[in-house]
Length: 195
Image (tube, rainbow, N blue to C red; front, top):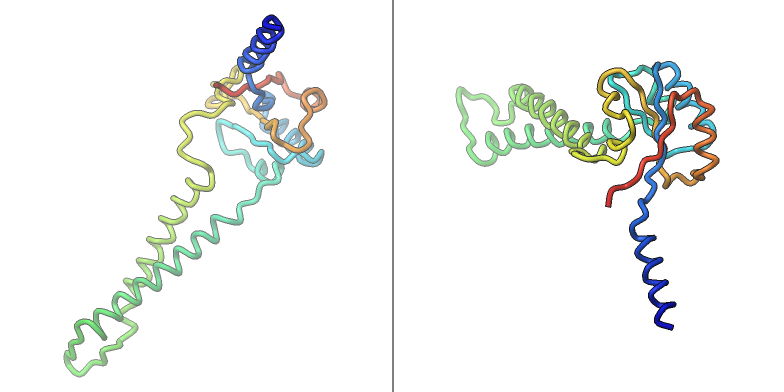
């Protein structure tokens, strides 16, 4: 009985020590091959895919099926907020809080409000765009599991990488690996999560 319990405990420790699969990373030499591979993966139904490149690659976002709809809306809301704050601040100051009738001009002289309203619109739109981009992209991210992939340091100089996460609904360890090997990759590697 004691031996059986010891075996169960030993098996549990072995499974706890086994690394958890994050996904696969395929390495490409040319951006055109990467775009074609990303397009094929997206058409095959994979959705938790991402690309890592040393330079911007035109058409890659579309090939991955990634469209950015949230950041423009975040910036629009930030711009409207900036316009409302700028206009409201000047209105409150000149009409309600500290009204001065200088030279018979009306207190609500809205054309003079436009420069500050414009400046705050641009400022808040830009700031919400920057911070919204950081939040949506999960930045800053000092560590990512793909950093441990073989040759991944070349993603900053001359190689192109395409990754698929194991959390993708269509992910199957063998099928996905075989499919990625047909995409023209120089190498397909497993990526494991650190513990």
